[in-house]
Figure 1 (tube, one colour):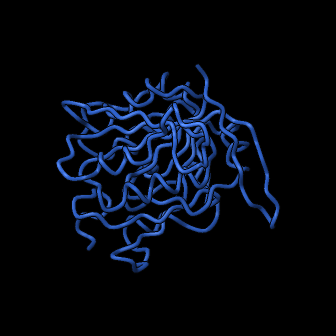
Figure 2 (cartoon, helix red, strand yellow; figure 1 turned 90 degrees about the vertical axis):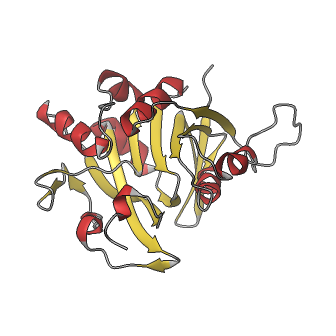
Amino acid sequence: MKWILLITIEVDGQMIDNNNKISVIIRSKNEERWIGHSIQSVIDSFKNVEIIVIDNGSTDDSMFIVRNFVEDPNLKNKNGSYADIKIYNLKDYTPGKSLNFGVSKCSNEVVMILSAHCVIQKFNVELLEKLNKYSCLFGKQIPIWNGKKISKRYIWSHFIDEEKINMYSELENRYFFHNAASLFKKQLLVDLPFNENLTGKEDRYWVNSYVQNKNQFLYTPLLEVHHHYTVNGNTWKGLA
């Protein structure tokens, strides 16, 4: 069964409706502080969206919070406060394995990967047109530490205000891509899955393989999220 997404986005004071097909994958491990905010931002951005939550054995209230957003199929008067959410608990978890599994559960042609501690601030309808050209893109992240926007140093310096094709990181000496807020054609991830043996930075290794095949990817601030501080978040290690 295909789920149809009606994207409603405000541009210059006007509401634009586009029929598209999209699924959002959210990975989680003890993300009770932000996962509700993350899911709410998805619901606020997309109507009738499909959300795939891949949990890594959370021991806090993360999954309780997620279930508060699950739509009751018997509910007659749907008010947009809930979503079609599928929850999976993955054993022998790795970042790549969780994403590949999530992709296999997506019903739709477009896949968005969103961190459980990222909150969508902007999703411009032009993103879907750009995806037709590049097949994968990632967006701007604004780092938030305990409510405060911090200076964009180190890894955060990559998230600039203008678009960049095949962004190269002098800091890492390789092409740079970040899965905390990214968008793909599903078939691309079926044909080129993530490495399931890596314990981190599966996105960098993936995009460098992608570029080796003479493909292009796009960084664009038309997709923007607040990336909130988490104690064990890989992006934040050594920065706080």
